[in-house]
Amino acid sequence: MDTSSESNNRANRSLNRINSMIRVHERLGAYAARLQVTVENTAIILRGTLPNQELRSELVPTIRRAGVLWQVKNRVDVAAS
Image (cartoon, rainbow, N blue to C red):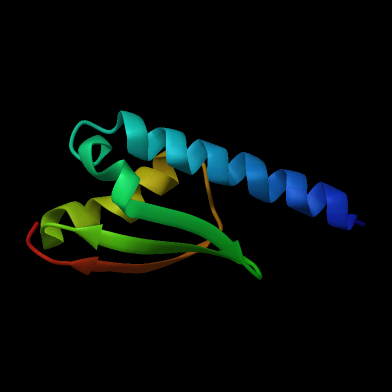
C-alpha cells in the first residue's frame, strides 16, 4: 500500500519529468515559462497560455513520451502573444 510520502514522491518525479520534456521540446521549450503543471487527485493538470492550437495539441503527446500514464487534463488557453 502506498504511503502519502511515496505518492508525493511519485507525483514529484512525474512533474519533474514533464517539466523537463516541455523545456527541451523543440517547439514548446520557448513557452515553458507560460505553463503550469500540477497534480490534482490522480490527474496531471496543465494550465497556461500558448500562441496557437498546434502547440497546445503537442502537450499531451509530449507528456506521454515522458512515460507519464496519469490522466492529463489540458486546460491551456490559446491566445496570440
